[in-house]
Length: 104
Image (cartoon, rainbow, N blue to C red):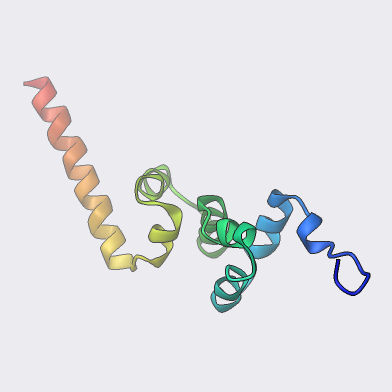
């Protein structure tokens, strides 16, 4: 309690907090992560960064989702587009190479 008043923000369920946080600016997310252990955990969660990527990019292909789940959504968000394209191409090539070796 703060000065006899309830802090309703900490009473909100995680999914609702994540939804709200997904619309914050990056600087605000960084500041919020310093408020408490709970907010630090939420601000660094894959679910939050998945929502942020979804909000900014719209459509996430299955290939992008697979890569993001492999490296983490936060890392995926902060990786520049050229690096992402290179990683996706390497994954495709690896898949092609392994399917060719299976067919031999």
